[in-house]
Picture 1 (tube, rainbow, N blue to C red):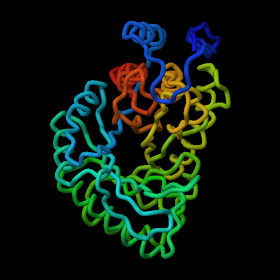
Picture 2 (cartoon, rainbow, N blue to C red):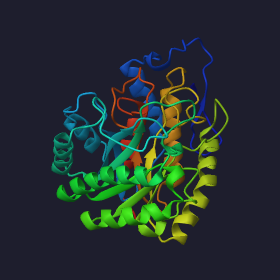
Picture 3 (cartoon, one colour):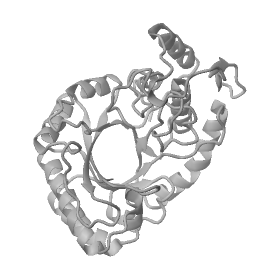
Picture 4 (tube, one colour):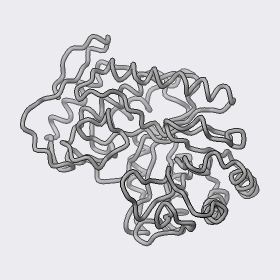
Length: 361
């Protein structure tokens, strides 16, 4: 990519450099520190954001293969970004999309003691916590994921899922977590109100704080139990354009189109709106495929930044937006990394700039 003047009023635009960068996925485009600093200054000097949302969050997946991994260095970095909230993400697994049982998975699920320590460490740093349990699938075929689970017996699945969620809700209550998510992206379950309603009653009995459900970006309308939770969560992996070299104006315009139906829907239900996941792998074409970090493409720090900037430009100061959680601080980060983490990348400076701005709400 190269930096050129734009016609969107920002003085910024991005076009792709068609030079010979090797397409080796997550280990390309090694940028010297001086180049990274220079690009950051150039990108950010022309833009001023004025009104970040009250809930300025970053997600932290507790995904280390070591169940006792210390996450305090990540929390220090998140706090330094200006965040007020952190989403701590835990995962239990089911064998495949037809399985009826969920369980912790060795090498993937954080230990309970470590989860409690990490919550305490976040609170000690002045961060408020959303506990965010998700479902993982051990064996997946093409296009299978948590949104397409289809157990043989839904009552058995909900019994097992209920054990998981209630266990996490008890931990959330005991550790005084500020927000609890009862589920995320479980598309095939969302019309099953007869199963969700008793589960949510049981969660309310053990956890006194606000409950959130996190819907997929293209599937928030079919959720049958919005009236039973307190916060409307959405994962925001919208395809922004079909262009490899979009302008910032194109990306902002795309967000504006998605913005109206979301805001209208949340206001009609009198629910605050929170983006539980906003993220872009630092890969070429990430604005087209924000949900896919597995593509074998060149690392592209500038396109990741451009997508972050477009989101901020579209949502900065919007009164309907309660909060945002950028996905996902976990991981090595740095200029050779093609994953979601903004650590050590241009996007991190954009988060810090927005989250550190004075609030005018």
